[in-house]
Amino acid sequence: MLTTTQAERLTGPESGGTTQTGAGAPPQAVAAHHSWQVLGVLSALMGFASISTDLYLPALPTMATSLGSDTGTMELTVAGYLVGFSLGQLLWGPLGDRHGRRGPVAIGLLLFVLGSAGCALSWTATQMIAWRVVQAVGACAGVVLARAMVRDLYAGNRAASMFSTLMTVMAVAPLLGPLLGGQVLALAGWRAIFWVLVGVGLVTLAALATMPETLPAARRNREPLARAFARYGSLLREPRLLGYAGAGGFFYGGMYAYIAGSPFAYITYNHVPPQLYGLLFGAGIVGIMVTNLVNARLVTRLGGDRLLAWGAVGAALSGVALAVAAGTGWGGLAGLVVPLFGFIAATGFIVANSVAGALAGFPELAGAVSALVGAIHYGSGILGAGLVGAFADGTPWPMGWVIALAGLGSAICARLTKAA
Image (cartoon, rainbow, N blue to C red):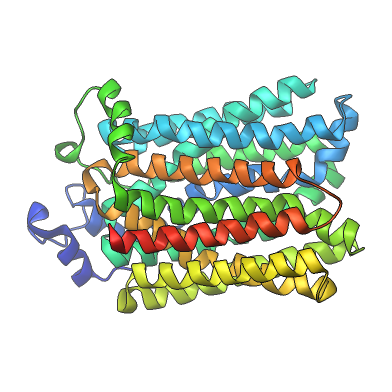
């Protein structure tokens, strides 16, 4: 975390290089003084994307029976969440640039609490899908503006290092979420899972009050919101920004192809017991945690762009190896597991550095850029999962070629960040 001396450098002339930590202190100095507290709040905000879905996944079959629905319809609760999460970010980014970070995040948390309560009280699958969209729109406020808050507090490679640290902490959610959700389901039923999410939202809202406002009034974007929304068009014409967003976006497409295709490829096609699938999935999460820790240590020395390029090339090579194994059957189960692990582990080098790189060029529009990048990431995830489903043929091949194309696309876009 930041030392006091580092905080002085970051605050710069705007704050007079002071290291005070009282009410009038600049947000960078307050963040340095309460570094672990800031890390905890930011981790909680960025973790809403995972916890909102991972916690209730074990309950989907039970929910389908309880709500008188089929499994396919219940899976739309995941798709609806991704749509709301992707598009909702485009709303919160400009609001955060105009009104500061804490107010919009607080409103988003309240929407998340409302949506979670609505899910708990739903009696039809249609109601559940609608409330999941509300839940997602609220949850994404914390994610998109937490990224902007990191950019407010940290600069350049230090921001990439912070993103890696946050993602390492966040990786615990996919590991523990299904396990905890299964325990809550067994003890109190599926509705209790959503009441737990209500509690998580309220606790995070209380913790938010301990965070400093990271965007002072003097640095806020006062242009009308309509013009701020229109600015997305101009941002999409920035080649370097598109390179960073594309590197992460293609990779997210591959990740969601993995999430959609791996249960079938492992359990149905290769006859892996469901319990072992959980271990294989967890191994990928551990790989993500390791590469994030490595990235956090190396990024200030080697630079985020270089590590992004290395990670994207690794993802491309892993994707091509996976496609070959999936298409030929070479290596059996290990032929899928090994390249998939390599692809997933590349997350630590690609996501943090692509987000930090995109934000670095537009500090005055950090909220809007964060929103646009997030929408591209999750929109690509929807596309990747959709392609695997659309081309399903009873083999792992569709998952393999989608992930291979995603890795190659990520590597090409990472290269574009240098050419732009």
